[in-house]
Length: 328
Image (tube, rainbow, N blue to C red; front, side, top):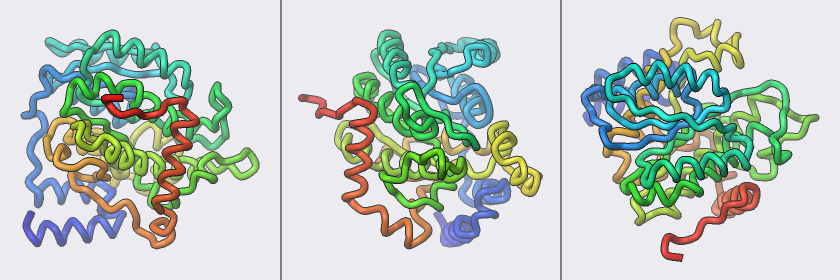
């Protein structure tokens, strides 16, 4: 990259509004000379993705199928999943499967993993995209706060259960779709699940997204040498149904500056198709570049080796999955 491109990128990133809106992606596309992803081929690859029935996930699913991948959609709403499958299957040669699962229901996640392992000996890409920002606190069947259950614990469990297929496809990828909102929250296992009295949907969402980014790095470290590359990314501010439902005022104010869903999904699709993410695991990406995981000293101070170890132990204990070495 040129110094001009690096300088512009840094200014956009720290400016946030410019970097997260369609202005940032449009400028970076030009100065970084992004390749057109439609020219990439995913033929022969199996991609498993949650949250593929609307918004960014749907746009990514469309791209994956156009690029020739076999796609497995994980969805909790069978009607929506059937409609998306019908649309995607219209592409010539499309191979699209559906597994009904709520990622916040750990028993359902285990059943879904069994189905996927029966269908595929090897899985090339696992995408954790399901997630919602809810104003009202809900609990999972296991009694966990639902934001944490569906966006942290369930994906952690699914990653572990699908490891045999991910290892079989190596070099493979696990991609977590996080949010820039995680920058506002420190890493704190003790405060990850919010009580009914203190519950704030925006804060709960940001804390879960912080945990996702940290777990991606921890998975990458523990799988180092196995060629299973784990990354997190954030899409910027995109105009999706989820944003309209959860943050209507924010959507109204930003209006024309919001990215399209396809623009927001670009880095996710790029990470699934390009080999740039196979050089080093555990990074946090936005607009096809690795980004820092902290912007504030307060969150950086919280991100200690001890707190990271607590998060991993908590995830293993809560999900019921304990990672063992490949040869164990």
